[in-house]
Amino acid sequence: MPVASKMEANEFRVLYVVPRQRLADKCLEGRKNIISFSGNFDQLVVLKKAISAHKPKLILTGSSVPRQAGMLTVEQSSVILGKKCNIPVVTVLDAWGYYVERFGISNGRISFLPDLVCALDETCYQDLTKLGLPSENIVITGNPWMDQFSVTNRAVTSKTQKNLIFVSQPLAEANYPRKWKYDQCDLFNILMRAIDVSHLRLQVHVWAHPSETVYEWHKLVCEYSGAAVLQIDKSREFLAAADLVLTSHSTIVYQALHLGVPCIVLRPKFNACDDHLPDRLGLTVKVLDQNSLGDALSKTLVNGKKMLRASAAIMKSKKIFFSNGTATEHVMSELKRYL
Image (cartoon, helix red, strand yellow):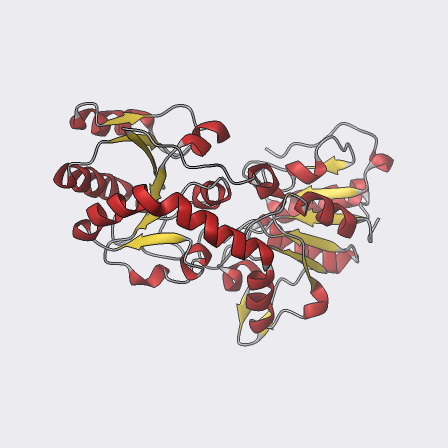
């Protein structure tokens, strides 16, 4: 069910609409003039009631990808109602890609165009304008969620045993907008075989996705006699201390790269993922088969952090991908234009 603050109606200024409580929490932390929704509900009905009751001056949204064709996201519904009620809508992007699906772009028409889109970086801005979003509707702010992962470079430490975090993503359950040719268990088994064949001294820590059953992962991990463990600690500190992250498709990659942890993306028999930004920028090591994985693991464990530091320095100077820790402040200054 939707949840809302119990404050008096006339105190509300911002209607904050997002299906997951992470995007704007950082930039709106401690501010009481917000209504936020969570859970499954009749979007248009609930949003109409909220707008009628609280008469917000601004609607603030994130931007998620529809779970299936023809289904509106809560953010898209917000844009529709914002237009009808003459309330400005500001959308803060928290991930690169899938812009066609997020904004409903078809045949040059943009179905869900907010009054302002807070873009992630210069590459995001260029991608959006190429798709037809007006430049006057876009401002480059950076990603508020990544401010907490913006750190200074640390020296590489040498350890006998290296630690790898395997980040599971429930690919088998996600068929839209891509249809994956493998699942998360396939990836894990490929990883463990590659480690065994390459004779690497590598401890694998499995991060199960919140939507997955931990029991099933526990059974699979136990098959590898201590070479892998199911890791409960998913903190920023644990991630920062890792030597390497391996996944197929997870936003943890963005966090790890900001923390200086090199990433391998394992996507066997699936070349269609070349458009993911970290791949395009050369920040991740892409592997398409088990035979290549062992070599990639060995090389990345030795040189990955050094190469990532060098790339990050160049990207930061060009204001591409990496946050400098000021995105929150930038987004707030843009919101003030409407309040």
